Image (cartoon, rainbow, N blue to C red; front, side):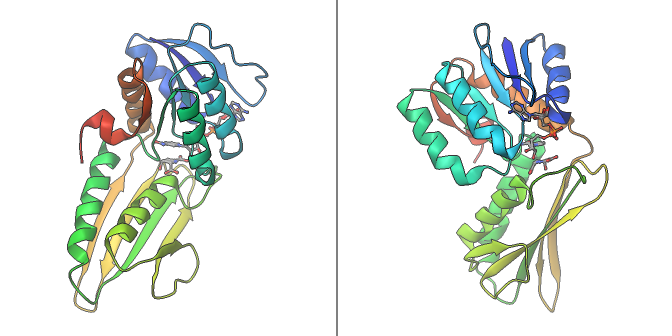
Length: 233
Ligand SMILES: NC(=O)C1=CN([C@@H]2O[C@H](COP(=O)(O)OP(=O)(O)OC[C@H]3O[C@@H](n4cnc5c(N)ncnc54)[C@H](O)[C@@H]3O)[C@@H](O)[C@H]2O)C=CC1
Ligand SMILES: O=C(O)C1=N[C@H](C(=O)O)C[C@H](O)C1
């Protein structure tokens, strides 16, 4: 399979290593200085760029008729616009805030735990995410997905990075050098605490999940998620 990398930073390079190991070819390595994207030899585009360019990158791939998956976070206020663009161009698109197989299992556990916690009183919930200091967005896309699952199932009406009101779920975003990505959800009461935690030891899991998603989506049409790729949930 021929893959165009839209973004060739930490993630683009990790994806390249895994894609080559799995006998794929890289046809484009786009960075901030790339002026034109040549998709003529491309089967799938993988966007891991920056929040301000992700929408444009995704639309360029769709316009060229190339299935595109995006792991870039921090652009989701334009998510519906991208879905509309994809539908009106009969394109193929998949976004995941986290491509790691472990985190996608963790999402299922988080959803189920929040359903269970909805029926007991006395617990306050908090999410903590820790990432490296180069990360541009806060909270992480993964923390937002986790928060949305909890909000869907419990008394919380929204999330905040600030001091929370009683109906707001607090997300604590910490930036510590070299941390690939850690997410922990804690339910605290006077009596006890329950926590679930995912710790990425490197970027390999994110990159492997992205390549697996690219292999899966290659000849498909429509809008998908990692639940479709992994057949879970
Ligand atoms: N969904 C997931 O599983 C994961 C998502 N991410 C997200 O992926 C994104 C990238 O992360 P990193 O690789 O660590 O960042 P990075 O800063 O190392 O790389 C960003 C790349 O985007 C390129 N870029 C900037 N403007 C561009 C443009 N106009 N066109 C094409 N490329 C452009 C830069 O030149 C650079 O190569 C972030 O939003 C991060 O949050 C990161 C890890 C996992
Ligand atoms: O920027 C990162 O590095 C990561 N970003 C994603 C996010 O915002 O959730 C996924 C992962 O945690 C690493």
